[in-house]
Image (cartoon, rainbow, N blue to C red; front, side, top):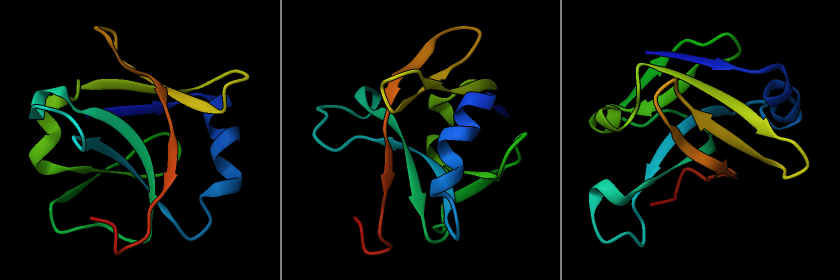
Amino acid sequence: MNITFTERAMQLLSPNIANKQLKLKYDTDGCGCLVDGVTALWLVDQAEEDDVVVETNYVPVLLEKSRLVFYDDNMVIDAVEGAGCFLLKSPNQILNPRMSLMKVSEHHE
């Protein structure tokens, strides 16, 4: 898997990532079905047992091993200008056009 951050995304993320790890979280809370989940960008304190690390052109990104099927092999994370959120896309599709950055404590379930 290859994840590339744009310059714009790196600039928006830089002030937030001190002592944190980035995680692409396939979030199914409030969804009727597992395949209806949406990807969010989380800032976490540490990896969970099911997480795998993907090296990028910026910082490593954590992904849940059990959710890798929902991602494409090549993805780009860009910042949405003026919206304060991020765009997750691949050559095949837009996975999330307005991906928020969420700071998540280690006690989040």
